[in-house]
Length: 250
Image 1 (cartoon, rainbow, N blue to C red):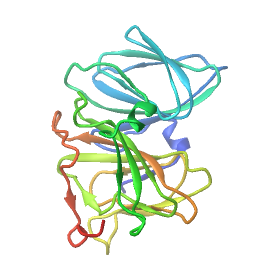
Image 2: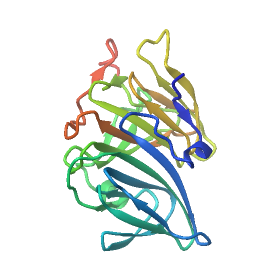
Image 3: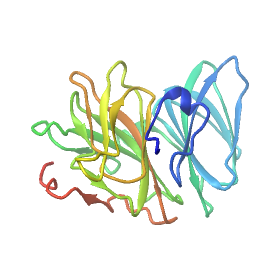
Image 4: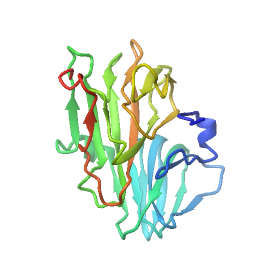
């Protein structure tokens, strides 16, 4: 039976829920030794979902803060440590090319109209902010990544769409406090592949199908998405299929 939903304790061991995407939750503290990651033949992104941490990668040093991304090329070594406490998500996908390390700051993306988009409307309860960190202009092999922040009680990933022939995807929910949301994954509404409650720290894998979601009343749904192109280099962000009959419901 295919598993779609993973809780934080499962993510700590590292998972490989999809053909081209793997994920691991890393908790750094000032009492534990630094974490060293060898990328091998994968490109890896680290997403800071709590706290801040220091990094050293290919002779580049710095500090990543909450909501920052690090992109690490294949055949690299990165060392991660913190003076306090931080929680990161490590997302990896196979690579076949030379790329460059990047520290992508949330503040830079949030202030860039080309990468911070607002979609939907309050009238249809679909208003949300999308922050594109690793977009199709970023030099990567397979990865496309960013944040989505919905309005309280609102829908995101709307209108329902799918891109299974081109890309697989996962969502990691964070910064939601005690709120919960409902995530669906389906090809046919009558027989959903997955429909369940998600909370802070959970991950849902989307190998195929439409995948809209909605936050609970008074609570917003916040998550980062990670997509991997099935064919390396084929990373068109808007290559997708809208569910028939829903294209006008924006």
